[in-house]
Image (cartoon, rainbow, N blue to C red; front, side):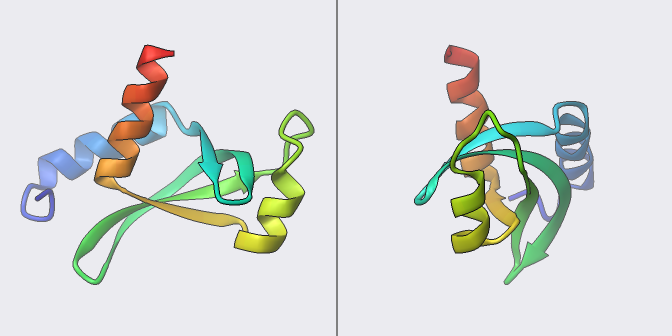
Length: 88
């Protein structure tokens, strides 16, 4: 969808850069993540976030051990996360 539209990817990058923090519910708990980069894997655009070790998020250590420090979202997952944030 966005692969052939460089301006859309550029806009998405700006949104991520301007709002870099995202709280993500993972299979191992809720963690705070910081935007790192946008890239492609198997022709799919992915957004990479890095786990922030934060004492306010008690699951951070478990998430780090079980999933590592990186978490990837598709465009649809990212937009859904921000849509849910807007309704909160």
